[in-house]
Length: 327
Image 1 (tube, rainbow, N blue to C red):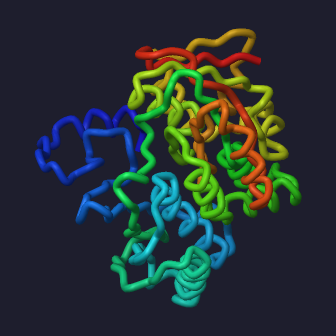
Image 2: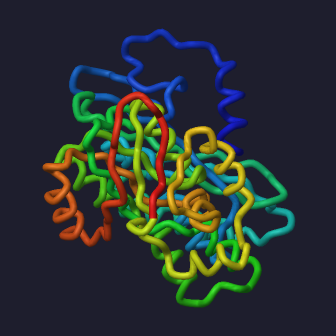
């Protein structure tokens, strides 16, 4: 669902007044956080979507990695997960569902969490994801609302999955482009999360359906700061620019552009670059705001963990909630 439409819906929900609710629906976060004890808070999230690749096992891996991402973005450790399944059992062989669940279980095991159940419904189109419960110390919780002026912005995965998947549907994606995009989507944000916990960062969010600019916009609004992002520094998946140049823009990118329009400033950037930055991501990386004096340490640690992170910009001012994009 487009981010603007979600905003219109969520504003009608009742306000919750509970001192133990650390993160709720009134924030820009994708997970809720509730303090159980002074040393323990529970993080709750869920996500599911339709297949993005033909291989059911790989689809299960990607969907699970995507579902776990919100918990990792908050510096929490996934503990328990439940499967969310929609499946056309009357028209599609049940073996496909078995492979999807096996792919999901593979990533849950890699995360060190446990599958403890789930829920399924009959549907015309397969959908799969997870409800995830994680644990975090309340004082070590990382949100998207504490970025500080002068912080450096790091991105831990290349963007462009929406463009590559759209090219795939049009039979215009090259084999290596697909392979690289699938590998990125199936990669957990586990190591990236561990690195930012170890170093200590100001704020973070994961990059998924709202695109890099959409999620950066939410971080800017939640933190009441302005951001500057250099397009030339943003890591891109092979083929992303080519797909954008052919006009293979996923529909969600247009909704994302509308969402960021009133807070977006550009300098020397064309429409193609903005299309790429608004490309909706599946199981994207983490956008991290970290103090400048810690940035080199974080990059070094991420590299040691085989996470190909890049500095893409910085936090420039208080209060604005805007994003400036430069070459």
